[in-house]
Image 1 (cartoon, rainbow, N blue to C red):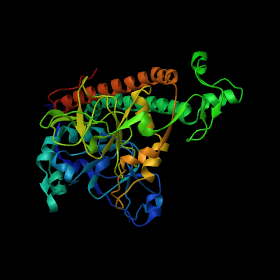
Image 2: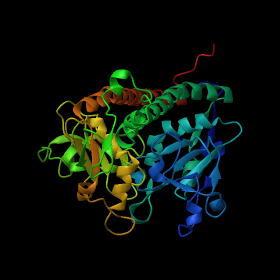
Image 3: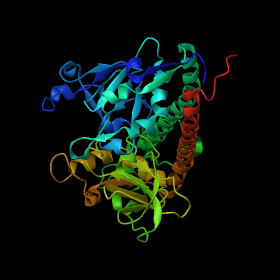
Image 4: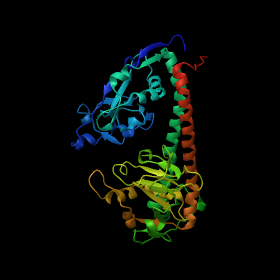
Length: 426
């Protein structure tokens, strides 16, 4: 280890702040745009947003704000039995009482400290004890006493820069994927919901952003249907006629197969966050090209949707019974089902048809019998596939690269943070 590194404690490296929860009965506290972080949000090292948001009225009344660059560490919750979530917030956020916020001391680089915590996850996990009802707990006093080997500030920044470059690329991939998906969703909305190419022709205008061959595929008129006005030559179909709901898949009991639980179904995004192999017992079964839509609140309301593209050819995966599986039928391509599931129209329909007790309502699969689609002729479906399949493939490639980079970062972490691997200063 470098001779200039000094031994200190985790408690001396940062100021430790506790979070809180504004009164849930006051709707005005929960109608703002300030992210309010709880355990369910802490799934990425760089945290950009949260499922819940509070208003400025809640600040100081249970809501406690920290600036961008603050480290959040989960110290209480069932999650701690398997993982110790650590995040750096990228904007001003609030957080609940199960989380500690660390604001670095003057001689400590915030990114270095966050990476130190990541590198020492095994030790942190070993420090988890049990509170009431089996809840995992990290005792703050115990955490503060953890010894830290701290290099000079300049070396801290150099180490953080190397690791940060990997996270920068992961972040760039995340933003690229958001843009690629937005492009696919915009095209879906334009063609299959707003019928923009047809309406342009009705107005005597050439369809925007379409080459002549693609524009020629669209008719010049709308006609009546059970769905309302749709392009001439298209058919209005109930969703199960065009997209199979909860299709039958074969998977024998006891088979080891990829498993995806609800917590790893992305809130906003394309690929599942973690898929593990488990012995199949019971649950929903899916294959590549299927779309997984959460059926319970608040998962559905928060946009949990997954596109299955992570299995081997011919492989069947399985997961929570709280998924609704959508599998498109020809001529519609697989991504049509995913983009439909991400649309405001289908999500609103599902939410409006929830049944059950408040706070734990579910979407009955049968409600989609009353959801109508405008199904295009095969040539338009094929052209849509030609334009959007490359976008989905690039999203998958970016996600795969990000997982590889995260593995490399996690390999370098203990070596850089212990001084075993030094940064060349040239």
